[in-house]
Every structure is written in C-alpha cells, then in structure tokens.
Length: 399
Image 1 (cartoon, rainbow, N blue to C red):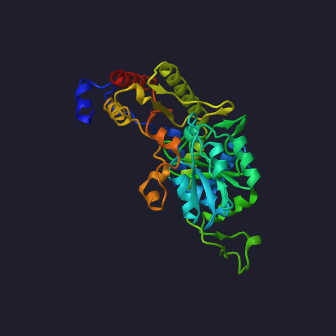
Image 2: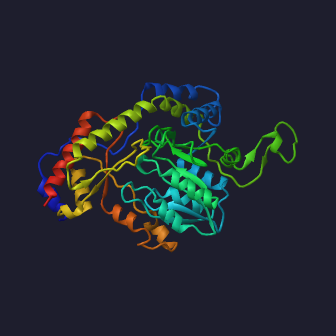
C-alpha cells in the first residue's frame, strides 16, 4: 500500500491536533536560574562548576571519578584513547546502536568488529562477542540499548579471560542498575550523554565515569589538547605559568554554564526516572494483548532507565510494512522514530568493506522496530493519544 492510499484510508481527524515528539527535554525556572548565575559570574568554561558536576555524577553512580566532555561522542573518543586503542586494534561493538559507538574506534585508527544482538532484549549477545575475539581484540563497547543494562556478568567474564577493556556506552542508561549496582560503577569506563532527549540534559555534553586513576588522568588531559599543568607530571618547569602538551589531544571541554544546567537537572533525575518507568508500565499494560506487536523484554536483575520504548511489529499479522505503519502513526501526529539502522549498513561503513548479512538478528529486528514517544514532560493525555493511535493504526492494517 503506497503513502497516498494510507492518507486516503485514514482521512478525517487525527488522534492528536499537534505533533508529539518521541523525546524532549524538561526545563524549569531552577534550570534557567542555574545557568544565569554562571553567566553572571567570572567563569564560562572550565571553571569550578565543572568540577562540582563531575563530583555529583560520580557520587550518583558510585564511581571514583567522572570526566565531562563536550558531547557523548567526544567522551567515547576519550575513552578509546585512554584504553590505548590504536591502528591494528579491534574493538567489538553491537550492530544495533548509534554510529558514535563505532565511530569512536575509527577516530583512534582501530577497527570496529560488529557483534549481533539478543533477539529479545536487543542488547549485544555475549555469545556473539565470544565468537569475534581474536589476538587483535583490545576492547568491548557494550551498549545499554533503550536503557536496559547489558549482561554484565557474562561480558565481565569474557573481558577478564582475554584481558579486554570494557567501555560501556550508557548514553541511554543513566539511573539504570544491574543486580543492585548502578550503571556507571561496573565497567572500566562508562559514558553517559546529556543530549536534550536523554535523562538529564546539559544542552549537549557527555561524561566518562571510571574507578581507574590512570584512565582518569588520561581522560582529563585528552579533553584539553593533551596539555597538563600538574607540576608532578611536567618534564620541565619554567615557572608558575608553564604547561606542556604531552600528546595530541582535543578541545573537548564542557562549559561551566552547561555543567550548571547538568547539576540542576541531576536534582530532578529521580523524578524523571519515576515518570519514565510509570509511562513504560502504562504502555506495557495497555498494549500487552495486541498480537500485532512485541513489547520490550526485561532481563531479570536489570533495572531499565527507560530512555526508549521500542515495539516490534509482527509483520506476518499485518498487510503493511513497517514504513506504512510508521507513516500512518506520524499522520496521527505521533512522533515515532526508529533506533537504529545497524551501523555497518551506513554507506560510509559499506565503503570500508562491511557487508549486509553480518549480524542477521540486528538486520531482521531493524526492519520491524518502532520507537514510541517516552519522556517525563509527557502528560497522561499524551500517553493516551499514543496508545489510541497505535491501536487505531494496527487495527486498520490487521488481517
């Protein structure tokens, strides 16, 4: 069925009068005042608020250290540098993730090796990781897809056996936990993102948490051009003004006013998590008996932070493809999305020699998943509209 026929079939008034995005930040007057206070002060970038934000993030997740960056992608790049990723090194990355999870390996001259996913959780399958390890494997980048933690026990076991560094991409998972332990305190390094659709926002930005002092020192220096002013680390010392560049780093610093926004947002994180969990539960309850879709599957011991709510459409029960269902939901003013095209199917990666068929589960699941709106600023009416639209569209396209 083409798009014109969809529009004709639905006709009439959509479920919603206005467009509902799949995600959106929640900002209030406290956030605005926090930023204004910094703008009126003496520091705009790399000031005392950065240090405060880092300490509060580290305290929240239960890690010894936290290092902020200008974006989550920059933070992953820093983590790959700190782990010593270089030309000839292989890093195992799940296929179903945002491109940054693999791009950070390329930045360091390494080679991403794509692992397939668990068809229930959509997280990387530990068995797939095991099969891909070679003498060149240096690290694993597991991704907590949608906010559900990966199987840390099995991944830690594999990493320990082969002496691999674990760089956890937890862009979706601030506030999640695995067997009672907060995400951010388990892996060698863990990245969180502060993009506006994430759990808290700093406008942009990211952070690496770690318990490893060596990684911490490398991360701090990497984000500031490879420069250090620390007296004990200088090769020479010409005076109190003196600093040295020890390696090629980047300007990946977060600003103080971003950190101020992050601190203010962090105070509301538990409220945000409660709302996300409540809305996810309401989706599960309202949609559980619809045979045309599969709902998210939660592993025992893993507490999701519910960044995304992803449904999988059972196309064999419908006379339409995912594209038609997606477009029909958009026509109802529901801002659905798809997360993600398997990374190696992007044209750039195809040019590097990656081929379709590499990760069958990821490719098959990609063809049938749709992300529904889920964010704390949604109202109960917004949630009801999404549920009505899903039922309306699937009802129309059902056999």
